[in-house]
Length: 160
Ligand SMILES: [Cu+2]
Image (cartoon, rainbow, N blue to C red; front, side, top):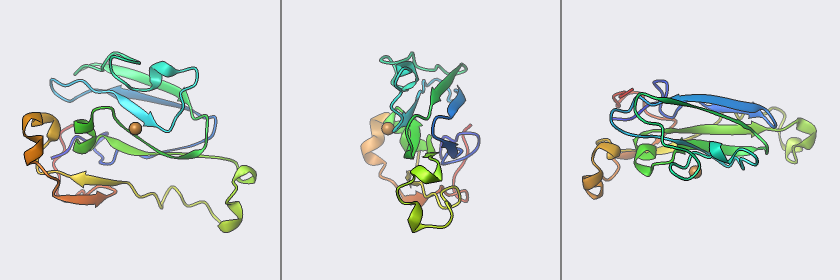
């Protein structure tokens, strides 16, 4: 079992150019649980309320409500996004976030002809026998079954 984003684990890849504005509306459909999303690698200069840390930078997004994140992809890099909660991360709430830069500024540009980061992105996660967020008291008894690369759409049940 997983918690999917838009029916996907990992969630939809985000591929943008540096200084693009990323806008994501998170609608929490996880019954009886709060969630926030952290944009790992984004500095959030000027937008600390978009950093996704519940009770620190924002109120948690309660079940049945939504929150719109909007921030500038201010620096290039290979990043990812994930639920702030480790149990939700383990349940599948994560995805890739790649901020590209113009070719003249790419220091490794001479090493390749084409940027294939979109089709060659690998997101590695773990697959657990049950939702960790629904079994917090038994987490120590729920080791992962396996690692998964770019998800495993054969063996999981969508929750959302
Ligand atoms: Cu992070």
